[in-house]
Image (cartoon, rainbow, N blue to C red):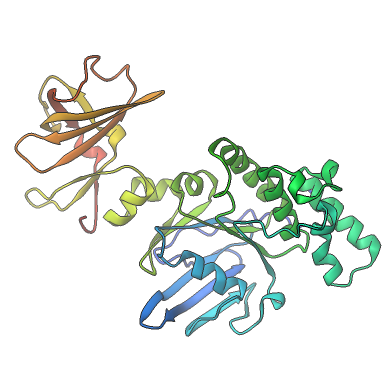
Length: 357
């Protein structure tokens, strides 16, 4: 562990319905009843959220849901009409960005093109008027963390997209912030590099031990990186929890469908809408038996995805559509569009939702 950065917290704040919890250490970030309006449009509605020291936290949601507005409010580039923003327990609602113990990493990296890697990272420490020895120490440590010590004299245009992203991370980390704010940091990378940078991002966060707040519309990115995830919808928090909690036990259809592929089973009898994940659905030639449930359906489309097949189906005599995802070993070998078969599932593998689509 490098001395420049804080040690990671061993005490994670557990998930809450509104993202807050009274237990554990003092939150590094806390939003209390924050609202933001732009004219007649309300971008954020009474937002309550806490993020613990050392936590990797993600805000996810469709475009326009309010996640980037939330990040800008925390960073100080915008101010709410109502509510308070606290960083490390201090009210910074009216404080300018340079008075807040957080740094923001932009999607486009925002590197100075005329400065080399070293000078880009040194910009922050020099702005704080640190001595030359301290600048050398802190910049060297930051470049070591992101694995760019050997490229310190290169200009940004001489770097790959992934290397530029790591320079941006080093520039955000060099001032030892209490939290690093990440606005779609991997969006500009190609798929293969994006996958590699996910692992790098998680490694860096674990090594430096500070809170990371990631804004992304990529659910796989959020689920694979985060300790907790907040799903936003139309300026409100739909649900906050661990990736597993959100995937297995979403509160609403909005959360269920955003976090992963979802079959929504309509109400039957006394039950309301239920979630059935596609990997829990079984396709076969025989009808359900015993405690199983099922419907007769017609194959609409079969898509090959390497280790798995994705099968889209339409229920016979019903508007219900279903999706099955499974390996070719478990699926009938002669699947093709137009074939009819049974879709079967165990009711114990369904999850009751608080609403419908």
